[in-house]
Amino acid sequence: MNSGPDERGADGNVARTVSARVLDFLGLERNVVISVAAGSLEALGVGLWAGYLVKVLDALGAAGWMIGFYGAVGGLMAVVAPFPAGLLSDRFGRGRALVLASVLALAGCGVYVLAPTWWLFVPGAVLLGCAGSFRFMGSQALTNDRLRERRRAISVAVQNVIGRLPGVISPPLGGALIAVMVARAEAAGQGAGAEPALQTLGLLRGFRWAVGITIVLTVIAILLQRRYYKLPPPSQDAGPMHPVRVLRSMAGDMKRLLLADSLIRIGSGLYLTFLPLYVLNVLGQGYVQWGWLLSLTTATSVIMYVPAAKLADRAGRVSRRPFVAATFLFFSAFPLALVLAPSAA
Image 1 (cartoon, rainbow, N blue to C red):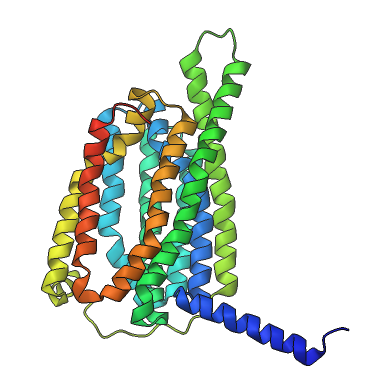
Image 2: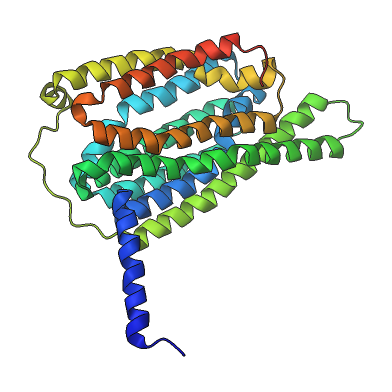
């Protein structure tokens, strides 16, 4: 006997109630879900090529100081861009800031596709650095606006888990794409006697194909956000807007945390930019193997996020210092592990 309309309606209401409870437990709501979906699409594309970009610069003839300069530009944008990104997010709305992030990422990818020399990658790094800051600041502000405090940590954790899942999938696929293009270039040029040049040609082709895929995914992300965001008009915050005033208004423990974070990032910046060259050139690993190492790193982060966030939510603000200390401990242990590792495995 078929179910009546009331029974089907009841089942639908139960399903919606369960779905709403799950989303509430995970600290998600409509606009946050759209933001996460758009960011994940872009990350899926970026993960195909980001881990191999330094190798591309090396193949284009960039010297060590040039690669270091490229890494410094990315670090500078991480320092400079967040404040205007947060300011514009407050003044013009979270949705507009997030759409602008996607547009900037699209422009940066366009530069990477067309750049024939290493130095043209620098403006691409500026655009993508700004895009990352706008997306981060917009998504964080969106989470703080829409969710209760007791759900914010778990929401940020879930967003990071979903946003990092592409980083588990994409790097090996990007490595495979580059490896295929290198093999094709070598096969097409057999007997030419210029194997390094053929490998460079294949690397550049694979890289540009990967960036092209990112452009398509970013366009989809822009359309998704333009269509589905439902946000109220931006409110005019009367809080301090000048950087010095913002810094003065911060609590003392936040200032100390920022100082500690700056110091640890200075140390990480000394080697992280050159890590792909260490694995690919010094340890002699292939593109796919390097992709799997990147995937493993991201998968470890994904596994740790939700349990750590739930513990942080339960501990409360006063007891969150151990989590910060553990973060710095892992930051410090990572380069030590690299130095002591006898092989890529």
